[in-house]
Length: 258
Length: 300
Image (cartoon, rainbow over all chains, first blue to last red; front, side, top):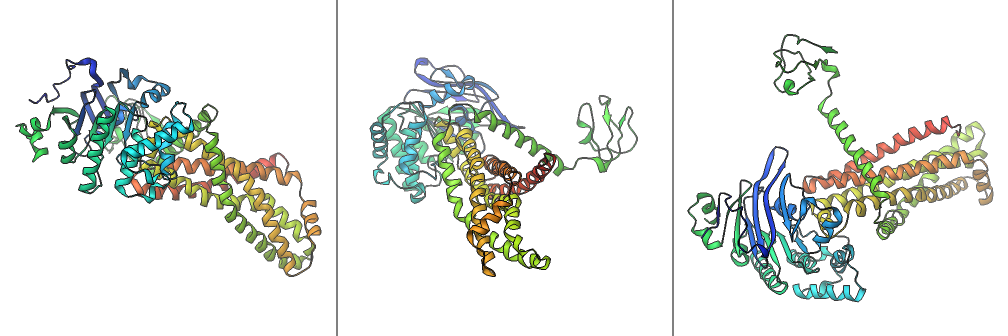
């Protein structure tokens, strides 16, 4: 059964202890363009929520607000018990160790090799690691995505799918509790996209992490989602499993699955 | 000019929407009651759109500069990245700067010789070239080449990092991108340009020595004695000091244009291009100010 229609799901779920992200009454606008209007959602441990919405509907803004890259106009974003908009840079850095973010454009550093790209978050966060520990973590992350042989290559030498995998390995290297994916299959052919989705699922099971996935790819929604959230007109318009949403009679929801 | 009652005639709706004052480029009439204080500015005094955007841009640049100074002295210090940038900005620019400086010295000497022969002071050629290169031509030409190479590369690099979300990725990896990318590059430019100017001057004078010897015979010792004997601290110090400012301007503008790059790949090209144009203009403006200051201090 559909849990939310027309932004009615603002009350916490019964298993409140399990919630790791709680967004409440979030507003964000850029000039006169109101992107998020009274948006609320919850994410629980080991849960995968896929956020669906039109281009420019504010999906990427939502996850950038969650990780503290974009400051909301008002509202609360509690991540692992801390309200993100109120945190100082130091506090934000500490909590970001526990959140992975896969960027739409992969955001691999062009001037660094694959090894240096993967080492970057390990060296920059305030974690004290010996060189052999860093090497082990890098190799483990590359093994997870099956690209050990690319360790000394530059991002420009890799294919689109390989770059996505390396970006995923960099996201995973700190073994985050939460992973935020910004359109992980955009620009990939259907076969590579399917491989990436399978990899995401496998990794999520291995690390028992929760995730918010921004996607337009129905295959991704079908394979990776526990729940689907529809972001329409800046609000959490509907939330439910894919099957529930597919059965919905709401014209705006139906439009996405036609 | 301030007026209490509106003159008759036309005004666009857009113009009188401001609360307490009005900037209009034509005639004013039909003002809302709330608008009691307003200013009538004749059309020729009305700031144009491009003038306004210039002032806005200057304001943003000043804020960016202020941010640089506030971040510059606070830990965490990015020493490794600063040294890496010094290597890229300084060492890797040396071949280009060396080549152009050498040609500049050689050509300048060959061009000056006929005029000096006409005045019967050919023997003063090394001294004249030395003063011209050390005081003015060396710092300005090296700074312009530096702006072309480094300003554009910083603008393009940061611009592409911005559009491909690499700057955001740095931030989520526990790094202050402004400090890591901007502060290190601006400092490296500021430090490395004076070094390049000194090396460029030396290479240029060597080119000049070869130029002198194309149509005459002057020993290496005599050439250098003539050059150094006619240079004073008043020639060297102002040139050295202003090259720090040239380096700062090139680094800052390159970073500023790249860091605020928009509109995807097109914006990257624009950032690189405008970084070179703006820093080249700034180099001449700084040079102008430096000459005035040197003059006031009596170092000319």
